[in-house]
Length: 141
Ligand code: B12
Image (tube, rainbow, N blue to C red; front, side, top):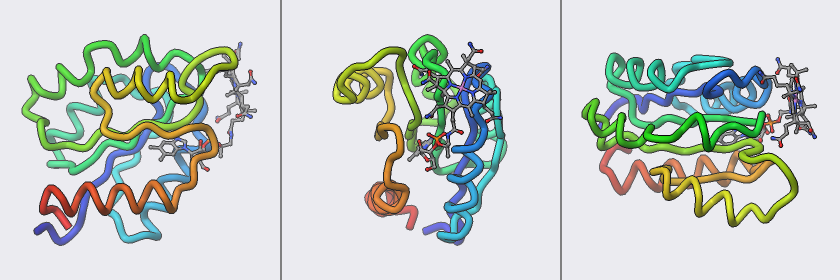
């Protein structure tokens, strides 16, 4: 069991919507997690590099500008190639353009390799409970 669980946050691709990831990072810290905050416009390669360097336990990614599906093609495979098999992948925000059922996003992003997918204005406390539960299953909490 680790003393401090390390979580990486940030918005992916060229997404400049930084407010949600900042609020999320602060709430994670208040909940006792060690947060490595990458901020806005973080390339997928940077998430992977920092996860390797810090031996992170989870990546909590945000995307609001509607391009997440394009940004994240092949991301899970790159994580696996980088030896990050055990890193939890969560994503939230506004994941696609135009009005549609969130369930479609959930299916799409799970296919892309994400463990958990959250709708706009997701309840952060519920997400943290998911995180604790997933970390416990992996024996990291
Ligand atoms: C502020 C804003 C901007 C600002 C961003 C300023 C900044 N530095 O952050 C500026 C003006 C730069 C901007 C630009 C653009 N924007 Co804008 N923007 C917004 C706006 C009004 C608010 C976003 C925000 O800050 N919300 C408040 C935060 C607190 O909420 P949040 O990010 O959703 O995060 C919360 C939850 O979702 C959750 N959460 C977030 N991530 C995660 C991750 C996990 C794992 C979990 C558990 C939870 C979680 O926790 C957070 C806290 O509660 C939204 C409209 C809206 N109603 O959302 C449009 C919006 C996101 N923008 C939009 C667009 C289109 C753009 C532009 C493309 C416009 C343009 N043509 O240039 C550009 C994109 C620029 C870029 N490269 O990214 C669209 C996106 C459309 C889509 N996805 O279908 C929106 C939805 C507006 C709209 N209705 O059309 N924008």
